[in-house]
Length: 283
Image (cartoon, rainbow, N blue to C red; front, side, top):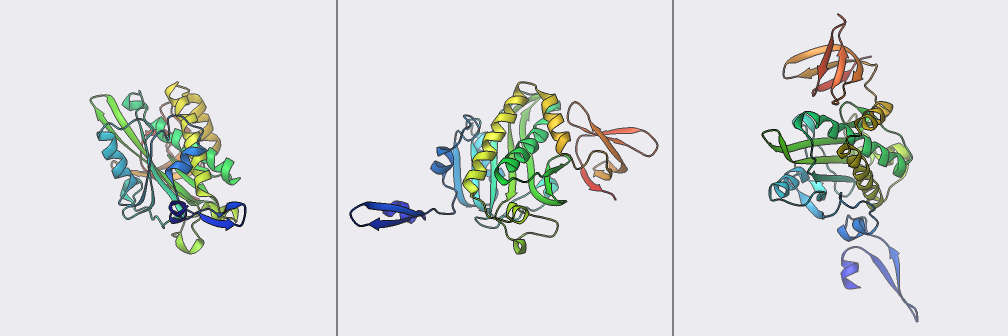
């Protein structure tokens, strides 16, 4: 009893009956996450940390050490959480889900962009089920609610020649973050839905959805992934400005290529294929 109380469970002694559980801790506990988890691979090994510099760094280290596929590293807060293009990801303690998953897909390097799209679809579907809200996806993998950033996804990999050794998928989701703790242009599930969420239940939903869509990726069901992504896209058929190391272009996002690249039609009519970049939607 003392051990459970030390972890934040509220337990009351009831005369002649024993003990009654009267309150649950707002904490991520590995055994609670696994207890209701439906997936078999994603979440097979769950490591929960209170504070970490970045779950990406910890997961990448474990990947290098040969950890099993589906290993998940999550933390209550990150001191140096990061997003795409070196951006900082703020991680208010016990308010969001900040985690990274180690995957070992048998895919060639030129198809790994689809893993990024798959992760965004899986996260969006889980949020729809858990939160009863429908986020959109900004290419390639930012989740938006009413044009405000709800979640971000970062992928990093280790490869030798053309062989992928492992990929780390990092996800940051604002769950119960109040309005005064989100940066300008961001949102949270609590803000969007008008209520607080059980983070363990949301986490379980995300991990189960990731396993489902990862299975589609491994079975080469690429069309299912790209079509699901298109249905949720806030980017396609919009005019945008894309910046990458080669420069900046403007045009209309017209489609996804079969490998997950974005196809942009410039004003001249020429269609440019982009596999990465930072986009700004233009009104």
